[in-house]
Image 1 (spheres, rainbow over the protein chains, first blue to last red):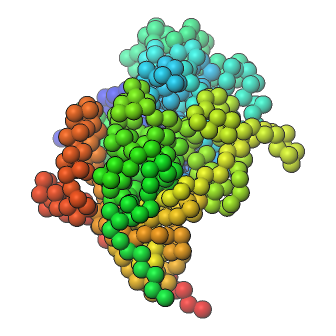
Image 2: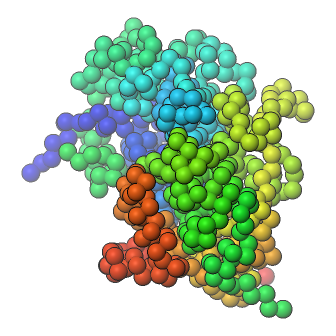
Length: 259
Length: 314
């Protein structure tokens, strides 16, 4: 029986979209989950010379099985270099990396991210993990890709706490800080792909995923989201990409929910 | 001169870790010392300030047990596994008592350790600039981080973070000798900088080897024996986390902890069973085998993937 790879899930659209953002030869710091699958997919297709780095200090890793965590033991054998946080994040801090992945509890109109609290910092309604390496990656990597669950409360006009600055209040505000990193280049959400206006740095909708409407995305965004004049459906994954994603990147279904 | 520092976990904790101390805890998901953490909880140590770039369930268990007043870190969570509920209960509702966290980034804590390990009072970093971590300060107040213009003329401002020198540090590694010369491979986490910054260090390890064996591969030593005051032989001492070359992470057990700790009662039951109900690591390992079977226990054992040896000759 031949397996059909023409159907795909939103999760798979996101992983493929992440892969498409990676250029061959780039040095990329990877998180777990979809960023990891996106990076693996890129490496197995158009970006074989990508250098995969984890904050745990694994540099140019080529794990034989899908790692579950950024500090998984499977990352170590086969890596070109293994150190610790000083090695993994030191090169991020030095501005040597092209790309990093971020996520969070909230993202706002100008790409500022919150992974600390919902509500007041001193009396939080919900307390989250904190920055971890997020702020370091946002400051140091030349550009970042943010992957988000697209819900109204996660896309407020202003975040409750700025863990990882995006473009602050927009325009040229980020430039005065002198970061090595230029800020987020794209937000890949569960509903669509959003980018930032080159002048105002305001987030706008670039494409909607298969089966999702623009109205639905606007309803799930906490400000009046601008829509690109070139709005279109997110490029659909080819069956071949879906096959590689399922059979080679995550054959045991560590992250991709089994159909 | 024989400098044997081997002792039990009970002994090192009662001798070297006192109430109110600032404690540096080593590891980054890989190889944290549960052997020593659980002993700290059993001995009901209190008012500790615990430091680590990123914390997992070991911090959660100490927080729930009431050992911790303050946290210096960037992260308390269990990654894709899920939230840590004792941390959340303490931060959100003050259960079992209110705790404070001085929020940094992962690298900023490393930078504080690096400054501490070099004996300089502070270090400039790029991270944290412009974030709310600069605006919200716990007990460190103004001394949490200071913005300063580069005196060498780049025109940019940098964040100065102060050196961190904990009273005592502890970590788990693959092997150490009786003097405390400690060798670790795989993911170093915050090592060696964290432990070098601590005033004194306690180590737990999978195996005790000889000083002669240490000397055959000295590049693998991450903490020299002179810093170390106590060595604990604790096989399976990092479980449910992994220890490269010895055993893999026990995902089922981590999910079990997160599931059961979601309620206070569930957490207490877990702790009674797996921490308070066992005297030491040997009893813990025995209980693990009795509960889950030898097959599961053996299933965690690492495969052999030996490296080639190198020539240290001259």
